[in-house]
Amino acid sequence: MRASFRTSLPLVSLSLGYFLVMLDVTVVTVAVPDIGASLHAGPAALQWCVDGYSTVFAGLLLLGGGLGDRFGHRRVFLWGLGVFTAASVACGLATTAGALVAGRLAQGAGAAFLVPASLALLRAAHPDRAARARAVTVWGAVASIAFGAGPVVGGLLVAGLDWRAVFWLNLPVGGLTIFLTMRHIPASQSPQGPEAGRMDPLGQVLGVVGLVALAGALNEAGTAGWTAPPVLAAAVTGVVALAAFAVVEHRLEHRLENGKTTSARRPLLPPSLFRRKAFSATAAIGFLISFGYYGMLFLSTLYFRQERGYDALETGLALLPSVCMGLIAAPLLGRVTARTGPYVPMAAGLFLGAAGFLGWLVVSPGVPYPALLFALAATGLGQTTTALAATAAVIDAAPADGTGVASAVFNVARQVGSAAGVALFGTVATAAGGFTAGLRLSAVLAAAAFLTGGVLAAALLLGVRRRRDAAATGLVPRVG
Image 1: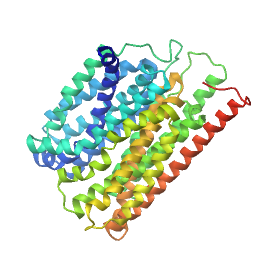
Image 2: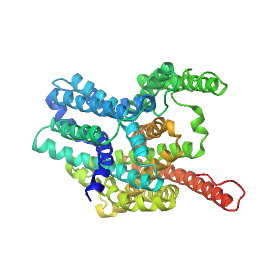
Image 3: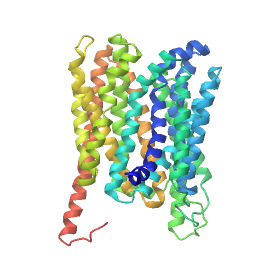
Image 4: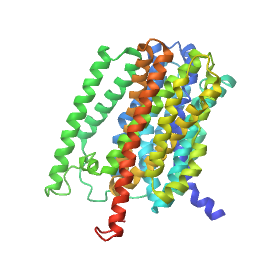
């Protein structure tokens, strides 16, 4: 038992790191009114306290993944933890709105280094596919619990202490995670080895500018409107920068493929990665599930607050059947994925989630809460099951020397999907002739997103089975 406990400590460390990242997505939201009153912060500053974190997180994920592949994932994981913990101290000590926003942006940067490295270390610690599938479900379930517990934990801390407590909470958890990482996760060389070549500074700058601008535009669109000049300017900047990024990455990879020396610059994101159908389809599924689920989670939060008059803590408790489905999904999914592979539970989760979103069609200001339980539980279970299975699929589909970038792309897709869903569904809710009508229409859009993802997952499953059947009959060699 003692040996088993010690072998689980690397997973505990990696899970705690992701726990911090996901907790800070939601724990701050319930503290916003108190922050505004304490720091005399205006609406714009308060919005950036919430959205700035996710904007920088999304914008720096590719850079974080590339740095991990270049310098070693343990080192970058510790960098991210250190930045995140130090930024939490800055947030807890902030005396002005500007200082708090700066701390939140720094937290997002730390999270962007931490998450891709965490997944890469998870793959290295569990080379066996079945064991890795079980580890991924634990890792993701801990994050799901953190996300779901955020509003409740934040409400309790604000009510019992004050808003600064939501940041002080990160210190003991961050310190413990750093200690466990240094003690139980061995240092490793760069996955790309000594022949890694030079870095890609132009690609890094273009990728960061493009992703930050695009994420910022989506975050602002939900409140300022899609045609607001700052939103349009940020969106155009993001699209142009990402288009230039794609051109630069294609040229760099083309030079390497044509026999240039190994000391040449390597692309931050090799375009050939998207030629792996399993990877590109799973990344698209990551976008779709976050688009549908988090867009609807945003509206359902507004529904309980505005239409039913719940306070922050009551709203958090009302959403628990949805946001805490990791407790149910993880034990089941670990066994199923180890036996069937990730695509069976992925497809099942997507179709279940689509049915759950259609359950929101019964919504009205006075509908009994039990009538919404199916919608809440089915969407939460469907999203969590799909996200955990898709994470396992992305790790399996990634090349060994590109796990960090591959996991970063998947997380970028999820972050952009979340921002797009919140922005679009927020617009629909205000333009559909009433909040309830907008909520129903958004539920249909979310169901369509999950159904589209379900078709993609089913196609991947059929492809795997065809290759397996062909290998069994000797038509093609069996692969790994």
